[in-house]
Image (tube, rainbow, N blue to C red):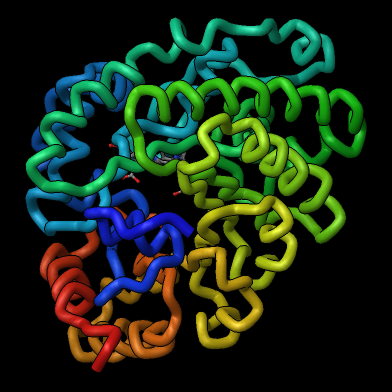
Amino acid sequence: MSSQSSSLFLDAANCINTQRPPIWMMRQAGRYMDAYQQIRKNHDFLTMIKTPELAAEITLQPIERFGFDAAILFSDILVVCEALGFPYKLVEKKGPLFDKSIETTTQIDDIKTIDVKNKLDYVFKAIKEILPKLAPHQIPLIGFSGAPFTLASYMIEGKSSPNLLKCKTFYYQNPKSFHKLLDKIADVVITYLNLQIEAGVKAVQIFDTWACHLNDIELNQLSISYISKIINGISNKRIPVSVFCKGSSYTYTEILKTNPSIISLDWNNSLKNIKHNIPKNVAIQGNLDPLLLFAPKDKLRIEVTKILNEMKDRPGYIFNLGHGILPKTPIENVELVVKLVQSFSNTH
Ligand code: 1CP
């Protein structure tokens, strides 16, 4: 356990007792904010990601507006797919749409080793642009990557899918080749996260959003084993690594095998049922249902306070949602949640 830092988030990430939990929200830089929509009106999404000044401005927006205790780099998990030769666009109301998708095992054999530093240079430039702007807020910047399974699922599906039909069919028919793809992605993600850390992020989160589509055996083979490989490959062992898999509030025992610093939990199970099963040296992050931000204020207040009280006796707790904040989320409810968490005391 390292000694106390100047950041509530990093202290909690290192399981050091904090006087109140830190708070940030997955997808906090995004569509629910007017300030984001103002920029989005004039630029397409990929331009926003690839222009360091814009990425920096958007990263800072939720910090300036709400005073979260950590910032997350404005980018997207799918930039890794593009770097690997699978470009995409964002289609209004539909989500990501790839120019081509993986149909054959030859396409996987043809994926070449890439120069991550060069291909994703705009991400490292964005981090360098963000850090001085973030400095006055005295909060850390979180970097991130998608995990191999979720990234592979987009490269095979070519778009968002409700059930990963094409991806799973490809896997059942070509398991060896599917593993080759996951391994190639994992190698890129290791370099990508190490370079984000070199550029100055103070923690990283690995998103395996679509791991919720896997059964227990597949979860271990296709998700957990590659996340473990990535965590082992992160050179700076002092950087906290958070793992978010959708399904985590029931599959946390498996996820703990990856040896994360922080386990990020979805909202399907109460933290009071889970916390005793998480080792004391692993921080817990979560897990308010993002839909509760649409509830009447009284209901929202009760639910947030319930979580805070459940986690009061647990050093190493980070308040967050159980998945990303949704477009159209009422801003005043985001403010209310931040206020409730930041005025809570773990000692009373
Ligand atoms: O303006 C727009 O239409 C863009 C919407 C948008 C935004 C704001 C996309 C497209 N990505 C992002 C930002 C983003 N995506 C961040 C930024 C940092 C933050 O504030 O948290 C992060 C961490 C992500 C990660 C991401 N992208 C994930 C994993 C996390 C999760 O929430 O599940 C996934 C699955 C994606 C793919 C993706 N990119 C964009 C969308 C709308 C999606 C999801 C589409 C789908 O459901 O398949």
